[in-house]
Length: 176
Image 1 (tube, rainbow, N blue to C red):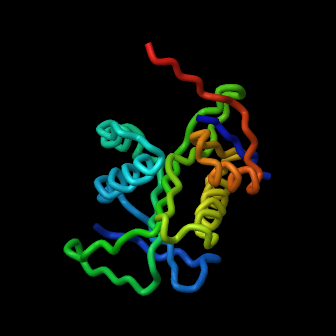
Image 2 (tube, rainbow, N blue to C red):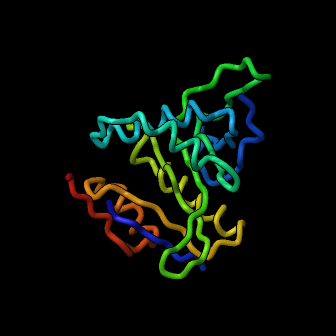
């Protein structure tokens, strides 16, 4: 896994107006989405070959707290009324929070998850999610954003580098 940094120069609240392609909208998630977030994370890590996913619930419990934010990318025109409304299938997900840059000690925005369903990839949606992450980080006053990406996820690494992320650390593991 490579650590990458970018220097920056159920109820939903509202659909966020942005530069999404026609037919898509970004919906703000809430703490009621924990189960849905775990399921989405399981899909993301499963695609990368993960076989042990039991820790994901604990990950969400530990890190999905303020100032974390969660958004769902969905088809436009989805309506919800009250708690019993059916959740539409998410096309994508963006989960942001904060971390500490271990070299400088500065708080930075941290991307816990950016995910687009396979059938919707190569349409600019991942780039749109990343641009939204950058805007959020700037609005929150962060000067830097970071994330971790698996080395074999070459398409994601290329996207992040195209957006200005630079590798700054490498996570090494050893089975004992």
